[in-house]
Amino acid sequence: GQNIDQPTEMTATEGAIVQINCTYQTSGFNGLFWYQQHAGEAPTFLSYNVLDGLEEKGRFSSFLSRSKGYSYLLLKELQMKDSASYLCAVSGAGSYQLTFGKGTKLSVIP
Amino acid sequence: DAGITQSPRYKITETGRQVTLMCHQTWSHSYMFWYRQDLGHGLRLIYYSAAADITDKGEVPDGYVVSRSKTENFPLTLESATRSQTSVYFCASSRLAGGADTQYFGPGTRLTVL
Image 1 (cartoon, rainbow over the protein chains, first blue to last red):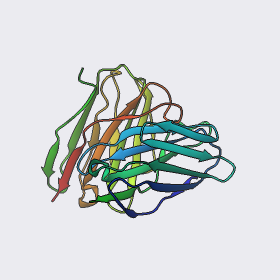
Image 2: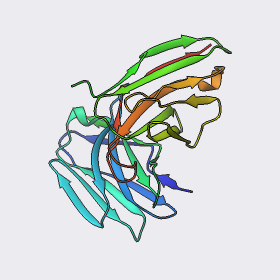
Image 3: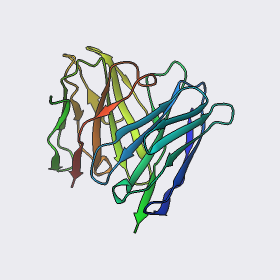
Image 4: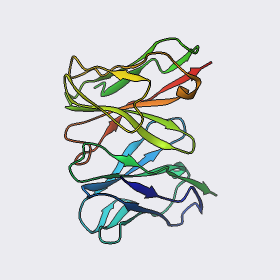
């Protein structure tokens, strides 16, 4: 089975940097995804990590440590529109499926 | 470029009725998925399909039936709706297996069972 943990809620200030952590235990590992979901909308893809290290994409970066079962999503220069839930999802080896964490609701305040 | 669509977007039904939620994608993706999203549980996989006529159970399949006669369509049927099936349902598709490729989500169907 797979178990994924991430904080339920976080609050950060506009213009600041925030790090959202995700820890996981899986039977095998294929890759880790981060999705963004605004209230009332569908999840949209942010990043995909399969190897250890940092993947940078504009204001968003994602880090993976396979040996520690740990990932984080780093959001820089926060904007009000970044207020959303951020979902961590993991795929086990040989699996067709993604297992999602419960999501972290980020509120960006002025 | 329609992408992935779901219908209806909102549905209210009564306990015991049969309900079918539709999902259609225009990318010719092989893999399609049905999730439900509830407060406190996150996204949970109901069923998935690797190709036409190939389907398999996910984490929470009880009370649901799927079919996939055409690559582009993946309907989800609640045979006899229960209040516990009140949820937001998302369909998703991916070119490769779910663990190796991005899943693209439809806009969701908000289902209320009275």
